[in-house]
Image (tube, rainbow, N blue to C red; front, side):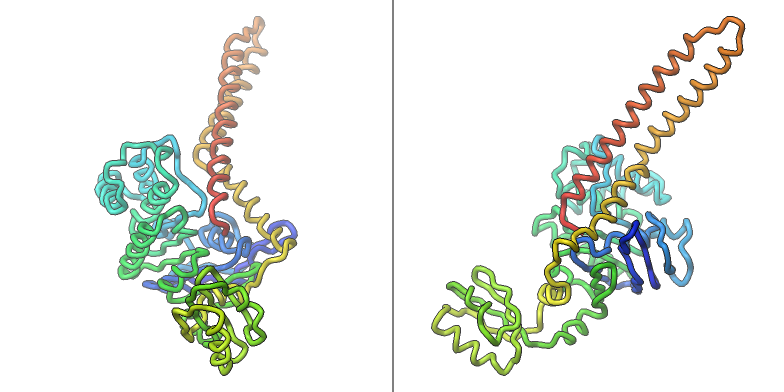
Length: 387
């Protein structure tokens, strides 16, 4: 269905996406993973033609993307993209119209989704009256309403409590059964482990791990031990036969250098911890992620900047900013036209140009106001979980 081949995107001197290739089939749930600034969101935005790639090819059902293709894709961005002063139902219907749906078709479906997400009586409220989690639900409805064939979700669980995370998981499983391809990018490894068929792990713009979740786990063997205990488990990190230890309050996942040392480990635990569970398991996706990516150095955090700069440039693409800029430009043109016309008269009068100039000044104020509001909303979205 979706095929991305050798995708490349550069920002100034930084290569944000470097030769990324992936395929997503209908009825598949595909996990796009990576640390902050790895290039996940840049990859998504390039696939969606929000930003232009510097190289590579993107096809949908074997054909290059067209205007018709965009209408069968649903997209949930990580940052908030809602009009805060507008009523919820109006926002949903607006996004439906962008996908070619009439109001008569979209409205009953919108009410169905609002009820599904526990917002049946909230359609008349303004977006700004909702909590962060409920705003996320509205964005999800906007992405789902037109029944997309390809659904791309960037941090879909952001702001959702555990109950609503389960609800979203159930909805995604239902949509998948309808032969829809789903790509979602998230840092919640537990959700990926439960839901995804295939994964792609990107680091520093390159794919470092990919394939079916089962094969990825096999690749990393079964040298992992799952422990649940009472006591202080900090000493587990110092054991000589432990390669890696994720130790928490009453839980630990250890990777041993040799599984033959599991008995020796058990002997060390008896005298120091009250053990509730000792189980040899496949490594978790979380531990594989840490093992492959490692802890980023401070200098590597700079790679996030290109995506942030791209995010800021998207302010100019917002409909509110574009509309106010268009009004400002029209006003300037009219002002210049009237001014030139009066100057050509024997007895010019500048009353009309003065009034138009005042209108231009107001239009400029509205443009700055719209730009500031959109920037604020986008910055609030960027304060959520990192990409």
